[in-house]
Image (cartoon, rainbow, N blue to C red):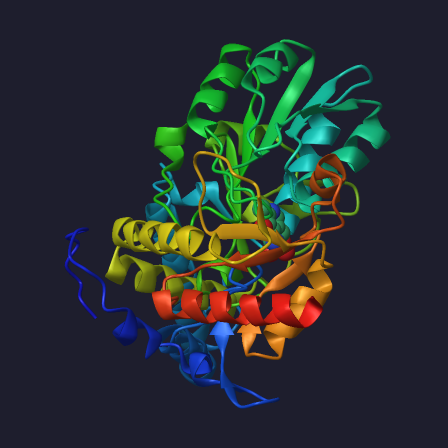
Length: 416
Ligand code: PMP
């Protein structure tokens, strides 16, 4: 593995693939080699991550922060080192602006419920976009319902691009917070979040960015973006499941009340009153996912060893190859044709149901996702039941794309 960060040096995808044991899978039915194109749902894990998890349980495992003994101190050091790694990966100003969560969904719920409690009042508005994942809709809907606020939605066009004129109007309302996805998981759209954050700030509105589909594909610098909160999931960036990250600017995290109560998030407890711990512990009640944090650190080290800029270039080249190759498939219709796209290609094959297409691809060893991708409002807007979604990662090759194209042609012939 090259550690040089020359972004123009071509990547050896074969060397990268060799680091992911699961990619050797033969899909049962016909012994087809696995073509894994469901990376937006979850990514596979390189050996370094698997080894870090194994090593953790074999040599470090102990509960963090509370113990004076050797192992507990080692576990605490490793856990806090993981936090520093995340902070430097997204360029947070302070380590304590990084809160470990269970994932993107848990991070959004943490903000929606605490922000709601502190700031949402009847008549206030929460602004989201038309292309949000259910996990960036439902928590806000729940908060709005509870506090008497109104959920407003930035509309999009048929290509899957947000209507910036409508945004400029909506943001002038009684908006208390804007929650927006960086990259759409159903359409692949990359939203112009830097500009939108700047606009929101001119009206004093804080912004939460859902970076679940961004951090693994492009450099994300929270200070440069100037977002107030940003969330992502470890499992979508080659790390283990069950852990994720909530970044919050210090001033905002300090303004919010704690989310869950329990051990770790307190300074003192009496039956009469509890005082809360400082950041980041105020938001980390209970025993955290120690092995998960250490696995996530290994995953981010892995990404850094290749270089996120090089990953971005390689994936962009693969995406454009895939778009050209897929457009030769008879009857294909792309869903989402925004000018800036990343990671995801959604499509339909003639009038066939996405599920039927997905099943026929599976029989040929190709893993894609079909359905609404947790974006039912996107499907309703486009008046479709769902899409077939191929999503890419650093270990995918042009040959994976060729296999997809051949398998789609065959599926099209079978379905008539
Ligand atoms: N937001 C987006 C854009 C996503 O793609 C996903 C995962 N599909 C989520 C949120 C939810 O992530 P998780 O299930 O890991 O909490």
